[in-house]
Length: 341
Ligand code: PHE
Image 1 (cartoon, rainbow, N blue to C red):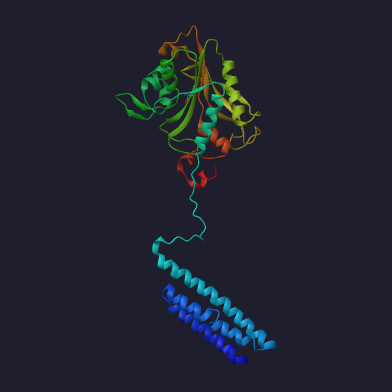
Image 2: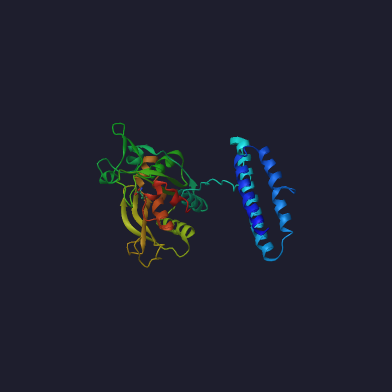
């Protein structure tokens, strides 16, 4: 009896497997279910025999039968699933699969930073202005008091669109100063964010395309102290109240006096690190009091008005804030980098 039941269990298993293998549609499968797994089916019959056994024999065969039952149920559901899928063709939709959540894009770190910078200045009453990226030499140089043949013109390493027509890709956002002043009388209080271009070979700190933000404030009685106060307020709002700023004498043809300004290094908080080359300071850009010669070009009265202007290198600030060591990373659009923001 004992060996008999074991044999029948083995036979049932192989019969079931071959019957399943042959089933080619859901009706055939249902027949198999009734024959093998139904209430009066072959598996139930073997459980009936088990009822007449006793002791160790009953336990051993019971274990075998239960294992077979689980296996038959599993194999049966798999087959049912695959036949069901076939019968639905390609339009089959499996509700039990986890959802396919696509990668959701996000803002580029430069976009985020530009927005933050804009809102800092807007809260101080600055209005956002725009100017063209393709400029004439007049706006990019002449009206900014950068004379023909002046070394500053070489220094800029300009990309020309048409040399004869004197059309260039702007090398800085300062020409927007001229457009704005041509179009409105003082007072003027604007920032002008945008792309700039220079004939630079790309390396860790140079990119032929980069962003600047220009600032311009013209009114009666505007002083260098206002410039310093504006830059300091901006730096502390953007980067925290412990940020320090520093001005160093410099030269730009369109400002007089001129300065370059630095922020204390965010990474090491001024103690000295690789980013600030151990100096504790990171250079941001140039600034100064608008040169009266520029007022002459746009028809402002230099006896009555004074103003300050500043530039700002957006990538430089972004590298500082996000700890990005190479400017090229902003333009490679490697999702592994972008996903981190
Ligand atoms: N346009 C200058 C540059 O690109 C920066 C600057 C802006 C300097 C405004 C003074 C005033 O280097």
